Length: 357
Image 1 (cartoon, helix red, strand yellow):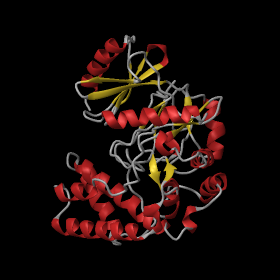
Image 2: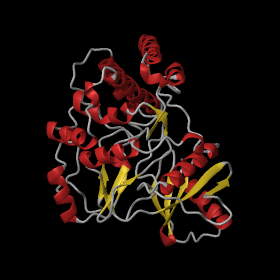
Image 3: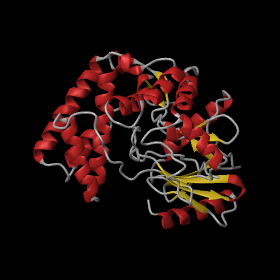
Image 4: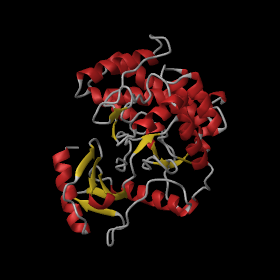
């Protein structure tokens, strides 16, 4: 989404909601665009026609607040129910989170465990069922990036995974899951509890899915050290790689990551090259552990205390982790993950509610 257009949407939405918008600062640009407004309010501009998804995310946030779960909080602007619509674009209003760092894997594990221990929301929330294959067939079929041999293989591979999933016990599980659980979706302020972010993918499905991205980073890539992964497992209390369904979930996750590269490759030759390489990996032409290049890495703008970063770095070492030594003066940190690495949707919001200092 174009940032200039999004700014005009925010200005109009803020006027409708009676909020100040002077000096709005761009926080993130992608499928969603976010601006930090005066008085510690973050405006999040969604894609046109995504009002229902925005309303569901707000409902999830309020439900979590009623259960005293530390998650991003919406701002209840009078007369808006937290949502203002401009030209079919939903604009939601959120409380900005103070300056923070992404979670360590241990912190992520504890947050996921607490989230999974919440009661099933039942009729309180109209949550969708986990749908890991949504949009994949359409993306593969319509792609101008893949050749016909790749397309045929991907469609066959997708069909195999769909049948394996339908035949597994996972398809019948309806447990509250986050849907996009990774370190960047947990903000850890200088003081206070970690805060869960990006509630758009919350749904009912197998808890194993929330553990799979980190586990795959460890088993199939070179992103996580043994000690880091052990800290994640110990914090959550269970190792998903011991599940008989892990390989199925890992294969689904990796196909989704490959399809993300395919989508970006329509307008980016570098992403197209990455897509071909990822497909070769899935086809067994390249042995694990793989090294996949991050596409459109998420940019997290945070005001960081050097001593906090150094302290956390000791607990969070690894080739793809935060490094105080490599932190540029602007304090802008990139993560090695694709923009939607672990999400069901294609925008992969990170620190998606303006959690910057």
